[in-house]
Amino acid sequence: MKAAIYPGSFDPVTYGHLDIIRRASEIFDELTVSVLNNKTKTPLFSVEERVKMLEEATRDLPNVTIDSFSGLLIDYAARKDIHVAIRGLRAITDFEYELQIAQTNRKFSDGKLDTVFLTTSLEYAYLSSSTVKEIASFNGDISECVPDFVGRLLYKKYNEIGAGNEQ
Ligand code: PNS
Image (cartoon, rainbow, N blue to C red; front, side, top):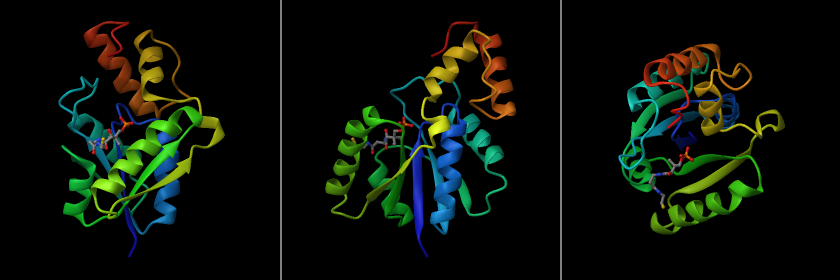
């Protein structure tokens, strides 16, 4: 059985992520989407909130599980006995950074963790969680970027913390 991990910040999950999740779930028997609990970043949503959003957004995909992790991806993957990480590539600007991380992970896992890249569908190539947050923080229309329930949570969050504080 072939399993893979799709790690990320998912702050919040976008249609771009969901496109990669759906396609990876068709290639692999089991896909674990895992939210990085990164103490050095200040995310807009807590890990618990991001996990819940991903659970809701992937409810129709039976072979997708949502989880979270701290520390190195290679250690987390080893604990789960999973040997493939999925990452989405939007543009050439993503490539250099992603290549470096993929090679680091392969080297430091002694070849046990490989990375499979899926190219983001063209309609989502412009999308990032950061731009979605910025637009939402000014009450802009994000209906083409995230599922409706994620949009509502974004507007609610910015109502609480104040417009323009996109974090
Ligand atoms: O959605 P993101 O923020 O682009 O995801 C980045 C992520 C979570 C894949 C990456 O930062 C990661 O794997 N972090 C865990 C620490 C780690 O293993 N780093 C790689 C070696 S430098």
